[in-house]
Every structure is written in structure tokens, then in C-alpha cells.
Image (tube, rainbow, N blue to C red; front, side, top):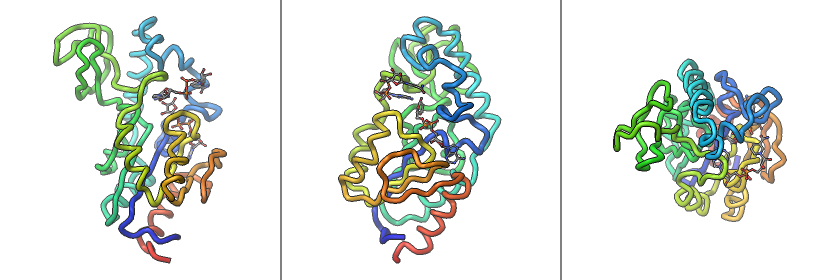
Length: 237
Ligand code: NAD
Ligand code: APR
């Protein structure tokens, strides 16, 4: 374990951290993109063509997330945030809300969130619970038929990019947890962190093939608490 006390940590999480909570990942053999055509359910064009199908897809995922809970990996990251004296930013590609449920607060949802709605008419973003459909009304402009899930689709710009790149530019430690590293710009974060001089660590079921200094293979519910324990207990070698 290298020296990191009072230094800056940036963490990126992906679907793998929620796998043991019972949510499917995207690119594993039985993943979401093996069952659904992402062009139909996760692009602006898909939504224009068949909004009912897109609502149904996210309603299903919202219900699934609501019936599951964060696991030991989410909890460990929330504890790290509380106990870490230096800079800390948790960036997630996940829309499930488990990091908040686990207690994380210095958290940015770069791909949006299931518990948020977006009005394609007036641009408002608002808290949303339960199913959404073509009859949903925007709580701000009151228009019907313009409400969509507040998730970032392929071809759209992820949220908080400036803040995230600023954090990466001064990162001393970058952790990538449970992500295949195939979707940009998140896939490029490790390179940014490396350029800033950070120690880059991947914690994943299997190495993704990205360029990390250290790769820890295994289930997130085991590897993440273990890594966090070691980091908190012995930030100096
Ligand atoms: P890309 O990974 O090259 O770029 C994705 C773009 O969408 C980026 O601009 C990214 O910022 C944005 N994005 C924002 N939010 C996203 C989110 N939640 N999930 C994913 N992307 C998000 O992908 P692309 O340019 O859309 O597609 C390139 C090719 O990748 C496609 O032609 C397709 O063949 C392939 N693709 C494959 C799968 C799969 O799992 N089989 C899924 C998506 C794309
Ligand atoms: N512990 C750790 N890692 C795991 C576990 C686990 N229990 N189970 C699976 N993984 C790993 C897989 O090996 C894989 O490398 O998690 C990774 C999940 O990768 P993806 O399914 O590609 O998910 P992600 O990287 O989050 O996808 C990025 O793609 O379509 C979009 O919007 C979607 O935000 C998502 C983005």
C-alpha cells in the first residue's frame, strides 16, 4: 500500500459493483446488452421511435433497483469517504442509487439516475419515483409526453465532466471498480489520472485490459472492503 493519507482519491464505479446486489451488468454474457438492443432502449433515436418501449425498459430497471440493496462494496466506499482526510470524489456510471443508499455523499452520477426525471420540453430535472410513461406530466412546465428518464444515453454528453476532469487532474489514487472500461469518456479516466501521476488500481472480477498500475481480481463485495480496510488502517507503508 503506497502513501496516500490526506491525498486525493477519485473512484469510478460501474455495473460490476452492483452485480452482487442482484442487478445485471451490461456486457457480461447474460448482461443487459445481450437481452436488449441498446439502439432501441438507450439512444435518443430509440426514444423518438418507441417511447413506450424505452419507458418499459427503465420502469423494469427502476423496480429491480427498488427491490435490491447495496452490498459490502458500496458500504465500504461510503466508509472510506467518511474516514478519508484528503480529497475524495466517487463517480459512478450506475443509475441504481445504491451508493446513496449506502451513505455516499461526495458522489456524482455521470450517467444520470433512475430516481430522476428529465423534461425534453423545458429541460427541467426533477426527483421521480415509480413508473414513467407517455402520459407522465412534467412537474415544472406541466407538459404531457415530454418526460423521459434522466439517464444519459449513447451519443449524449455525460454529466459533471468538468468537475470530474478537474478532480482527476489532481488525483493521487484512482480506483476503477466493476467496469469493463469500454464506454467513453469514463474509459479514459485512468489515462487522465495516470498523467496526473496517480497510482491507478483496478478492482474487477477479471482484468479489463486497461492500463492500470495494480489489478486486483475478484468479487467487489470482497476486494473492495479489503482494499478500503488496508487503505484506512495503513495509509503509510
Ligand atoms: P461509445 O462508447 O464510443 O461512446 C458513447 C457515447 O455515448 C459517448 O459520447 C458517451 O459519452 C456517451 N454516453 C453517455 N452516457 C452513456 C451511457 N449511459 N452509456 C453509454 N454511453 C454513454 O459508443 P457509441 O459511439 O455510441 O457507439 C460506438 C459503437 O459501440 C456502436 O456503434 C456499437 O457498435 C458499440 N456499442 C456496443 C454496445 C454493446 O454492448 N454491444 C453498446 C453500445 C455501443
Ligand atoms: N465484482 C466485480 N466486478 C464484477 C462483478 C463483481 N461481482 N461482476 C461483474 N464484474 C465486472 C465485469 O467483469 C465487467 O468487467 O464488472 C464489469 C461490468 O462491465 P459492463 O457490463 O460493461 O458495465 P459498465 O462498465 O458499468 O458499463 C458502462 O455502459 O451501456 C453503458 O450505461 C451503461 O453505464 C454503463 C456503461
